[in-house]
Length: 218
Image 1 (tube, helix red, strand yellow):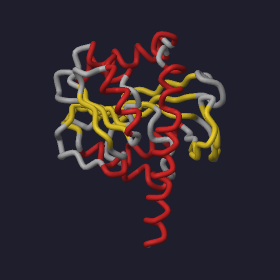
Image 2: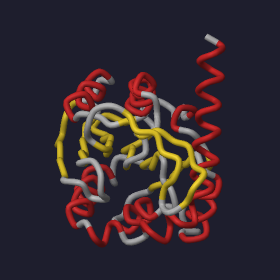
Image 3: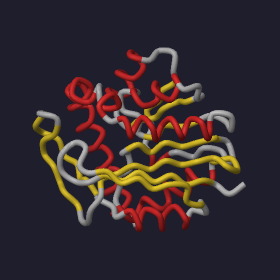
Image 4: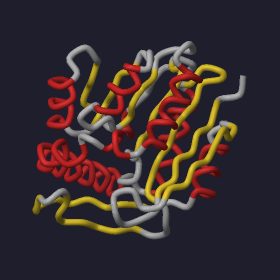
């Protein structure tokens, strides 16, 4: 319906503006995340080991590029996309050897069987719940046989709307929390098979966290 399309575009515009607004503060506050969380580094290390010989990896919602850069340091051919031009500007400045583009997860159309891996590293939780299966399905089809998709997000039920974040006022976004079993259902519905599920206590305050990995059957 036209109304639904307008609502989705308006929501993405507000989200883009919000992340442009907080990008500078975000970079300063979150730059050391991987250094503080060895189990997150371990998950990325295992992912890199599994996919680096299968083909390129797409980091969906790459932010300022620190996770892309970590994967590149592990020998992965990785590129990133993010909705926020300001985040992409930070990523390009900090990691000029890597490729970053401005794009929404909802608009991505990678070719079928073109990627060794996809990383959705706490980057899908702003999408309306009903939109996520289609996005995951598109990304799953882009995997080569044996390729893996990593999906990390905030655990819980319901949604929370925020008007401030990272010490900055004037933002507008909604965090949609997921239960791991519902994430697993989306992944299997996209034709993927489970690899591993990790659960974490609150890493950044607020909700517990979960990270699921699934692969396209060989």
